[in-house]
Image 1 (cartoon, rainbow, N blue to C red):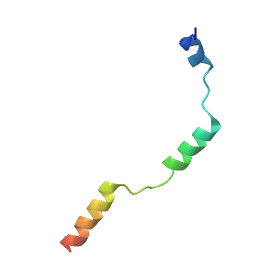
Image 2: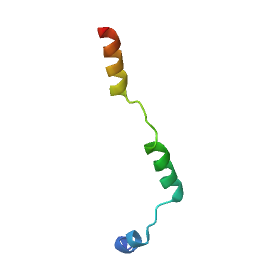
Image 3: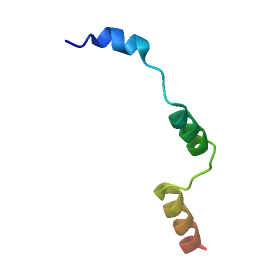
Image 4: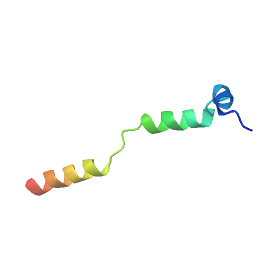
Length: 45
């Protein structure tokens, strides 16, 4: 049987995942709300 508590204690995140998180969070990404707000501003001009 697997002892989940013991496995959780041994868990270490992958370096690749940490690198991916850094790359994702460091970028200023445009989401749909930003796009819609920009479109609404252009329509109002």
